[in-house]
Image 1 (tube, rainbow, N blue to C red):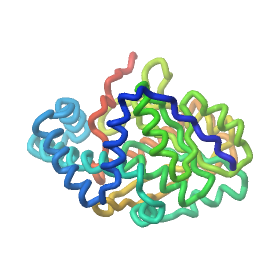
Image 2: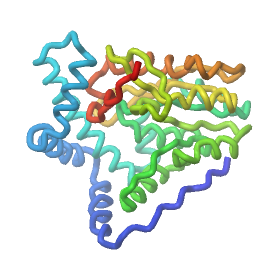
Image 3: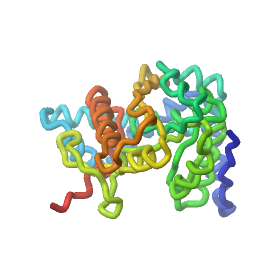
Image 4: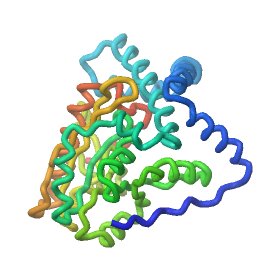
Length: 301
């Protein structure tokens, strides 16, 4: 598969020192970056108290069985995880392919790989758990020329350019969100995977599917149901587990083989994704991204 790269947009010259600083930091060994992360953690958790109200509210509603002290402890565990993930994402700018292969292990790569010889496109449904940025780059190394991911372009031209280079330098094919349909049409019949982060908050204008998720009425995007039916895609859930600091295990779960059409209106794939993700979060709650307002939308009945 030939993957046309998204060209980074030019950005103002005054961002150059920021770029040099970030690239310089990314050259530091990960043990040194984890020391930097310790300071970042203290800043986030104790000084800035970054979105602390949102984090605590999300956790209280998601784990009603936990006491206030347990929720507070879990919040600080999350902030430490988040600080480590930030420096790990920065490290993607310069990490070598062998180093990343060593740190990300696919426990069952055949689940995804079996579809490629058939020319089947596979929608891989991921989330903001573990280190979500490392997954796509590691997949690009595991399945050369066959790993793509949908992303939402950033408004800031510098950070848009920086993240594009960071995400694509090891071979991942990036697709702007509004180009998803065009990309699937272009590559129909070519065995490859397209990653969707499917846990973001869908608004009323997105005609979401509502289901109980972590004890809350939750809206989900339904793109997987619609795209799988339209393009006869297989659908695979991507689970990530932190084995230890800086090391992750990826496990695939087949949700649909693409051999028959599932009625999109029944949202079977979105429901299956929600159940898989719920189990993973409950198993390792501090490794999920709790700072976003996941439940800001309420259903109009």
